[in-house]
Length: 272
Image (cartoon, rainbow, N blue to C red; front, top):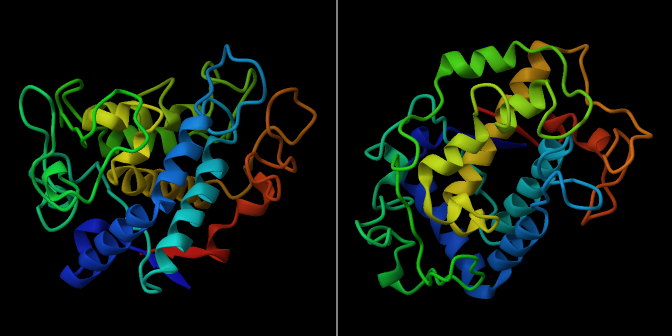
């Protein structure tokens, strides 16, 4: 059983194995396939068609499946690698351990935001922006520039206390746990972190920055925490809702998995 750990508790070997596996996926072109998939499923409330990846109840199971596939891709290179999570309620500054040169690298430089340190820096030549939505050929960050503070533990606990998964109209106006966690209402959790990191993390091609996986791994952990706190509450809607993925509806682009298939994360991994 895979165990996902807090990135702050990774050993030097675990960090190196994770980074090396990510770089190998990039070298072979497999990494960019994940970027393309995520970018294709950024759908606004006003767009026609079914919402799956964002602004909808399936935000959480969709990303759970997405993370599982990425983790499996990493394990095809190094079987011991699991996704680490970034607890941004604790590691809240540009000097936190995940931004070290032996892991994700640091902040972007003044002017153009280019990341100049660590394994994903443009100068290293191993992290080209093959799928661009902003025209830049290099990884960019602006930690804490667009929004000053990351979410706090108090804000997280307030969202975890909500006892309903989601509500009509099942979009960014909904008043339920999913939408408050996603960040369209309430204290703005998930969305705020993307904006705090800046650079490509503010675009549909956000997996261009490897911190995407650590951020979403923590979002997934918070969903698991919520499930434990509210064992009688479950995914909503259960079905028969136009343009919304119900409990037993398949999710694109896979078409072989439903939210119901992903409710129990312990079938696939646990959190340390």
